[in-house]
Length: 344
Image 1 (tube, rainbow, N blue to C red):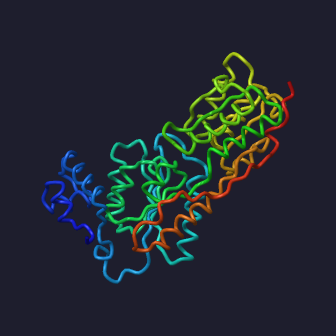
Image 2 (cartoon, rainbow, N blue to C red; image 1 turned 90 degrees about the vertical axis):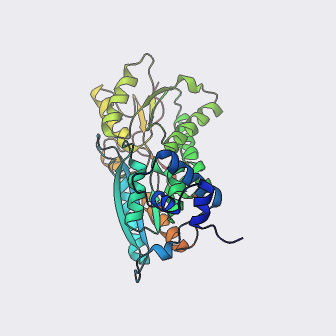
């Protein structure tokens, strides 16, 4: 049986060929019901756009789109996006690919449509997605239908069933932080989680709780707040945790920016770090070394992740998508002055 065609998609969806074309190119004036029927047919048939026929004649080198998710209503993460972009830029320069960068408001209801339009208008051969877009299954399938190979960075394991992924083992990393603090004698904890739906950050929390359970500690006793990865949210969440009954001796934050905010909250409360409160972050971004005291954290090789995403897309070229696997890059615990044995 030959490869499915656009006519096969039209027949299965019960629509005209031109309607399928409008859906795949993210054009307006298509009802959601019709758009969904077309995308289901695309998925069932495994249809992919003929990328080489669509590309401009004589164009050299792959065009790779890097999609950064951002909350336009809050300050940006200090390093996460720039480190990924630096790694991707270096790899593109080395491999002769072109990097096209887009920042998309993750709170915008039309964010997925904006990404699809960017991929089509820029004639991208490959797309790199960051969370939460990296975990959006419908978006991943729609990009594949456009003929774009996709690599998801710091995505959950479910994304690997649809697209290639690159990231650390977040659950193991969360476990490593938990074990470190437990080994130091801490038994009363706080944890500041990341954004709801950010699967890799949720895995960090899961791994941390697994370490507590293994040590015979009750996960229900952890003082938990949810931040949004920003310095301000770390400050405010820590202030709420410190106002709760029961003293904690160690606080873990799902990224370094929130941990830096936690340090400020502790200083404002006249707490000595780490004697009164141990604080740990995540990512090993530059801020972790310039705050006082420097943060114990998990090193996530962000630049390498950006490089690997580009390398995998270049390796795939115009062929079908990169292998649907979850490529794990190494992480490590970085111990600095913000954690020490429990003084109680």
